[in-house]
Image 1 (cartoon, helix red, strand yellow):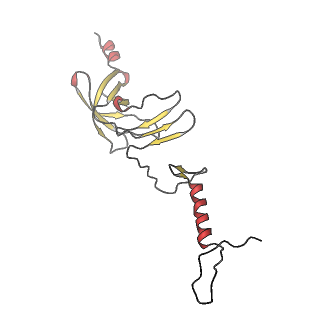
Image 2 (cartoon, one colour):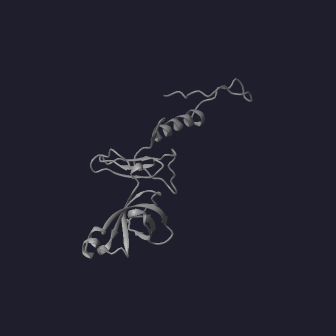
Image 3 (cartoon, one colour):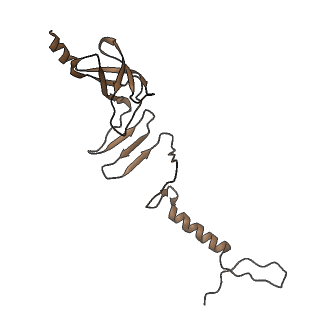
Length: 176
């Protein structure tokens, strides 16, 4: 095979991720390539606004720019065993190896499924709609609290037998 053919054939190859160095501005990975060769300090090009630290053993697509293996890059690293399956057309999922998923649904909904069962928010949480859990909505809880306060501390009448004696339980005032 001549040199040009070799460069073309080696422009895109597969490998397996060994380690990730996520300490610098550009993430560098070490991978095992064809025939078990170790390729170190390969730049992992990632899309703006998204960064990942893929697990050891993930599949790697290695790109040798211009067919030169002196300066390879990778932009696609996938751990297929953790991939979210069954997405509808247009849906997007962010996921990790623990099973945590953030799913942008084709309906416009957003589903957050933490494998730990906990979603942590640092800072304020603002909602323009109502908040709902298995027991009901926050609006329902507010109304129950208001009713409790009104009955307990609101306007009511105490009936006394004589001044200085304990009064009876609160009673609702008469409505004119």
